[in-house]
Length: 227
Length: 404
Image (tube, rainbow over all chains, first blue to last red; front, top):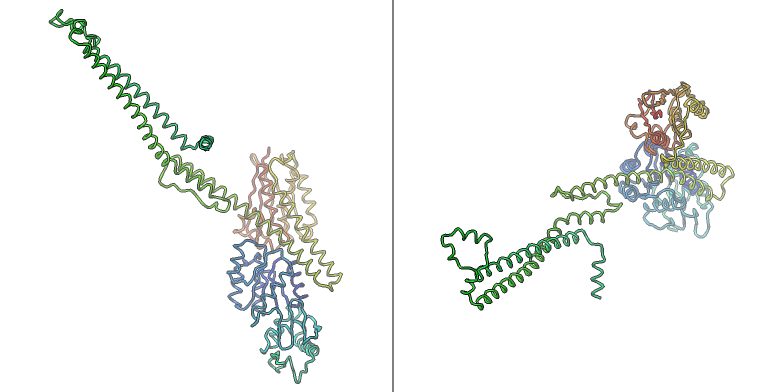
């Protein structure tokens, strides 16, 4: 899942990005409203964390613009404005959630998880496909009763595939949603490597896959488990 | 029980309406009393005289004899003693009794009338005063209902143009002032809260992100420490400036201050910054100018302006400081050839926490308090500050300090 942090306080944005990366999200930073608009134009984000006090664009206006541009983008407002009026305005401008500063990082993570659940057919906090179980809050994956040891990116890829189980996901899309801007240097080979190690961890066979199917020239698909 | 409740009514402070009614009733009662006593006395006097004249031949008009002495039948007019002879005592007694009872009736009627008019008048006055004073009650009712949350409410009495209306107008004006100062206060504290929360949020997030990561390296802890240190200094700076902003005029410690050494000291303190930014600070010294001011605060006020001139400038730029006597003012002029201030921001640069987009870009760590403090200090000294700026050409601040 890829998150854009729109926040003019660089030290805070940096810490947020780091914390989100530690928790298995891909995160980019935009320090200005203009920058945020550019990044949203070129990249696919699942969620935006938005500060209302930006130097160039009014946060509420930006929220409205983002909502109009990307109807499916989840927007979480993270701001110093604590008044009821601001909260109501923010949510009415199209934001999905509102969190006032100073906040606890744990709460932010929990709210992000809750927001990401919205697109799922089921609102269960634990993702389940066949005998695979993924818990975003503790960042653990179980295959049956066996706990899998996944690295950050593998977890990220698997989470995205599980959220869209049964759908064909192109390589580009997977890259968009699992990698942040700074990490994109190695490109596709890197994705193959990660899929390969993920399969290995899942005891999956690329020729006769039980979990991750490769559709040459198209992308990947996580099989909706019958097992 | 009854007595105590009666006592309670009287022990309460009387209302204006009560006072008006009571005073009016007392005045009405006394006036009635006087007029009725007068009517009764007059009636008694005239009736007595009339009886005495008709029956006893007592002279009624004072000039009776003088009148009669001129009459043609002098000597034939009956003397009083002769008259008595024509009237039987029983007739006199009857007449006196009749007069007595008439006078008594008059007295009873008077007393009745007195109470009747008093009661009727009292009721009339009560309703009249209630009608007159109702707007006052409305004023006090509205005043009770208005709280800090509903300060936008106003009293309205379009129908009258009397003292009550004047009171309501005065009340409304006061409400307006109160509302404005409340709004200012609210804006101020929400800005303060915002400015304080930002570094707090930075500190907390940095801490929590590193603490949550079980495998955080010493390097990451180092970095977190540095970030938190930075946020802390910012907090300290804001708090210190806010304390400065709450200073009052009484706290000024005035003395005669020579401007030349003061400006030299400021220039010296800003030397590292001006070197870093490659901006020259030129002070055109004039030895004798001095002003009666709080030295530490004046230092602060001038330093803020000069520092801004350095920060919002370009490499190779300059800040020129001149000062001179002009009428009753000592004028300090701080000019630079820096980036200037956009026209639409020039009005708000002296407001607390106001920062233009350009200012934020050039100096992210600024608090937005510097010029607010300068203006406050200058105004505390009885002076004023003016700004002239054209974007991309430069800015000139003129600080006027009273020369005495």
